[in-house]
Figure (tube, rainbow, N blue to C red):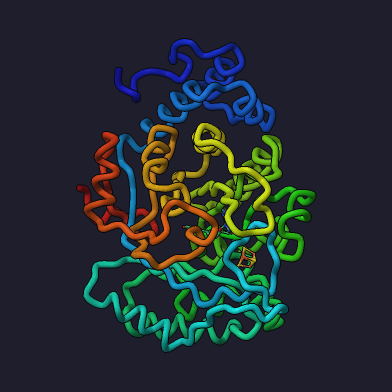
Length: 375
Ligand code: V47
Ligand code: SF4
């Protein structure tokens, strides 16, 4: 049976709660927060998988996107002290960390001169000496060297700090970086929006309203961005749905989000190591619920360096239609947090094979989902 021809409510064996939700979706109605919680509480893995896959195939067929990218992590020194972070070296404690100069970062950019990379992803700790003018200079130099390279850079946490330090409004700060070459924002720093949980896991950085406002500011300037959710720690189902609902509302207003990326909490070597990591089954449910609930987010991404490549393949049956990029062993965030992927790097061929092995169509995209090549 083709996914396009049948309705969600035709899926056989849905329990009564899920059937009611399927009927709503078939009628084009938006799910409420209560519906979202019901999905988590009452949906079995197979029911959620079938529903999410139906929506995914209706929207994207078998297309599964990836891009060719590399990361620059300017520093792991950070003024903040998120308890889940295995990556940062606290500035105040003067622990050992790295700080790249503009020249060192440009060397990295130049090392890709002969490669068909379309995106550089710049994200790191919040270093008090790396200010907005330092980064504007970096952006200008990258653009002068390689104008076609899309620069996706800086979480709302980094931006909030930079703007405040420079005493610039969010609009003025964003405009300055956009003019210097910043094309879009990655989704990091969102964690979980609920203020009580945020207080316990990342009390000192920008709050939910600030995070959302920074993304809205970017969208108003015509820039796109992504959104993440850190799950599998202290939060419950209602917190996850609250997070997704806030993003959904923001998207209704400013329409600039491309992709939602659930990020599984990894517990290696951080102040939350006592919290066990959740199961692969729960991971798949998060992706599936995201696909079903977040009706105005075109893309749901599984970030393979964090999940591991096999689990990333599995997510492609649970609503996911994007598995990020080749990465080229250029990020440390997840290997330091305990991911199976200690040196994340995949050739384009390997990434294409991962997608094809699970019966999907591999499509290379640029950051804004323009198709570069269908494999
Ligand atoms: O905000 C930090 C997360 C994020 C841990 O936009 C952790 O395309 C799990 O946002 N366990 C930064 N997660 C990375 C990020 C990202 C990654 C890939 C693609 C994109 C995109 C964005 O990493 C942080 C935080 O939520 N993180 N520590 C940890 N122990
Ligand atoms: Fe700093 Fe980001 Fe780590 Fe928080 S998650 S401590 S803001 S590097």
